[in-house]
Image 1 (cartoon, rainbow, N blue to C red):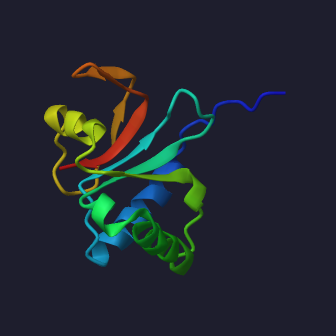
Image 2 (cartoon, rainbow, N blue to C red):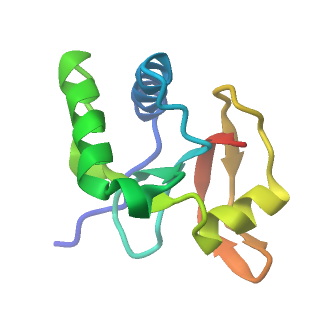
Length: 128
């Protein structure tokens, strides 16, 4: 039996927000953060657009996020988190259309075309 697609819940939103708040408090203020529902996955993914990711490296950033999750008893697991460089075409297209500022918001998006790219169903915290 195939697993059904995970529904987005307030709990997912709140736990994602907690991760962002903890990262911000430690000076890791990432400009793009959103939950995204990729069509080929059955669950939501917390996506971070991170400046200089290719230079810093995924392992260092993911290590900090895992530490924050552990130290703050956040229920999101690392396998729900994806990282991309903020200079990735996806982030650039997103920033060209959506600007939320540097705070933490809640902008729900249905699938939409942005500069020829399809943005799947998403809940955006920040695009700055």
